[in-house]
Image (tube, helix red, strand yellow):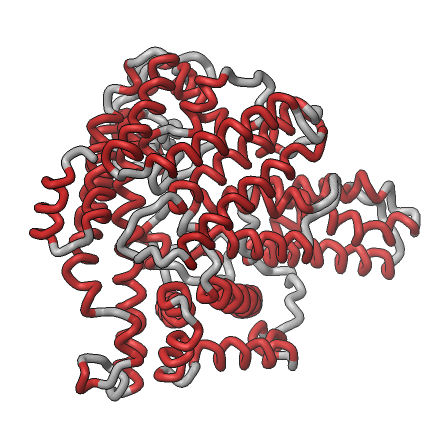
Length: 595
């Protein structure tokens, strides 16, 4: 191993495990190594990515066998996709092969007496599993399906031209993200490698201050911001996290714990401990995002002039294509949907696009089977420790309750549908009334008290320790979630909503209802049919609100699919009464509602 003595000396000064020091060092040096990448030709980019990753694994981390495993599983995926073995089942063969291989390594770590302070291959394999399974599905969409069979997201990621082996390996071992992510899409990597990622839609590259093959200005500033957040987050974690450990909830005060303190103090301790645990992820994810930005792959177009304070190009360029966490989005989340949308973002995209949507039959919307398979995949992807499964199950219940609360209570506080109530700046707070500020504050508090309760399972991992920690808090998270679920079953939703949620004539939805009525252009019908039409349209409107509150369904395509299916179902009866072709009516209504 290279520089082993230097790393050991640095670890002694920092008081951290040697492997952790190595990992953080590699995440930091990845940024200067990534900076010159945009100036290289495409072939050189592939070679540099593969060679640098090999240096990381073999020269620094001493993971020779692990690197060979990753290389081998990548080659197997490449030839499975190239030869299309299994026909239309090829992506599922790749999926189960990669997940099976990952699970075996999780088992080796769990039962091989490998200490938590040792960096081994599973973390890197988790990232590679996302990349390889995404590649297989994108090959399937591009070479085994027509464009008409794909949704909008799939159309944008189809691989119609199969890559060379070198190009594929450059993608699989893209070194800014090879250690801890983020996962990437092959079409994005290819566009970055050949320079077309920076081309403006109309070929006017001067609009962003660059050329067709070089990134626009602004990446150094954006990367510096990410590096600063990363360093501060890791400093907070190193200095304060050891004093705010969930395990202290199970230890008596006399022995340095907090078990004998007041309930309010223990609950506050859990919330702070949850934040301290997150700072580690904030640190490593922002460091790796900085190197992705400097490499140029994170470029994601220009922000509109109206959304920024400056008009210069550098202040408008967006570098969030590879972003894996939105710190403000997590810390100021008002519900679990917002929380999950801003946490481990690329993993959520992978689960949604390559698991959740793929389980459903073509033309059918994802349902219970898709949800359960996605949950199982996420659990196995993380590992085999029971704490992961406990955390995910409880998190699922938290999402369900939060969705019901949002659907029934939020419309009474934010009556104007254009007012999102997001807390991203002081100006957004100044636009809220006192009641809305109270609602937002309580929502954020509720998210973090339930998050800290669920996070204990994810961090502590073994069931006996989890139960002792939960017992010190009187199981408040479980009691609150189950109590609310029972209450909603008994009619709490109607009480909270204060009405049957029928759209009133003078509400802010008048314009939308008028658009719907104009779009479907139904003729005058008897009063009973008009009432049926109003009820159907109101149901579709309610469906929009429901979908907006649902987790894991943020894509416009998914919303459109859900709306169209629901609209068809609701309008069919009206069609049977002679009010028009139901499919045509439903499609028009769904298109208007989606705007």
